[in-house]
Image (tube, rainbow, N blue to C red; front, side):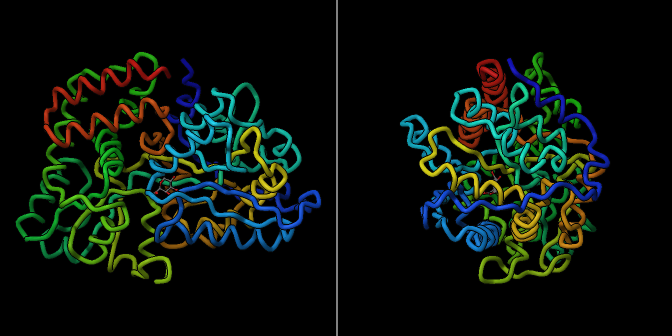
Length: 427
Ligand code: GAL
């Protein structure tokens, strides 16, 4: 069992984002004379809010690489559930895209172990990238001293988004701090006639579950769930799952994906939504891609209940698959993704903070300055849904268990399924 990444998740990352000037990541290559050759970049950033960041990075790539043509191979569907299924069949058939998005942590370790990725040590040496990314993050994307991806950002998963006017009308004074307060507030909203909690497609429930587990169990007990002797059968987990059941009983009808669920909050139809901070990009970006809403007025945020002081993290990273048809083009993309310019163009629109420690912090305002602050002081916990703590097989088993639970609401059966998922994870 390889659980090396867990060593990184339980520690504080104070000081990781000190502004040190580091080696340049902006040097470009011509692409080896392959004029306007397509570079297939595989992601799932097609939807409102998500696509804006990719577009900005793509603009930089185009400017710096006239010999390559960016080919957007994004597959729609939040959190990449659909994209990852397609990617896995492409990789099995040895038909990889030139580069694909993969989450740092257990998800990436799966690609590495199955021998699908080239080591990027040559790029890390050339661009001195070990100096610019936090060591804890590098650990998540490495095996035996080889680094296998370029992290472009840090996202926060445990965010409670809320509509201040809906809360006020329901007689709620500020965001709930604990899971118990949250449940009381959900009930108040229900009585006021609004949707207490908006939800999207099935993966958004796994996303909700990770915040409820963290908020109910506390950081150390949550982190322990991903270590070798984890005990998923104890009474604290039962209590956390009961909380999940109660919270779910206040959910509105499932929306197609995370954007329509988040929009119910921005539009004042719903009070709360627990979603990652990509929602900020969607709320805040100008209307071409986002909703153009005003923070603290149309929407507001807090740590998801019971998780203040802990940053449940995830990181999007890009890879170099073995057999990439346009390897030079993929490397050119990775250079943009690794660069300060690329990250500072991408992240303010994506609703994330840069993976690089030397980013221009003045670009990260409003929610994003809070995000940067929390990242530099909080304890860490890893996301389930977004690839940090559980490999694909484990995440899928959790997803299936959540799907069944949504139908039968049987906490004991749910917990048994989670115990089995941990046992059979092969992690
Ligand atoms: C995550 C991904 C984020 C964001 C989100 C919603 O898995 O890391 O970048 O895209 O899904 O689609």
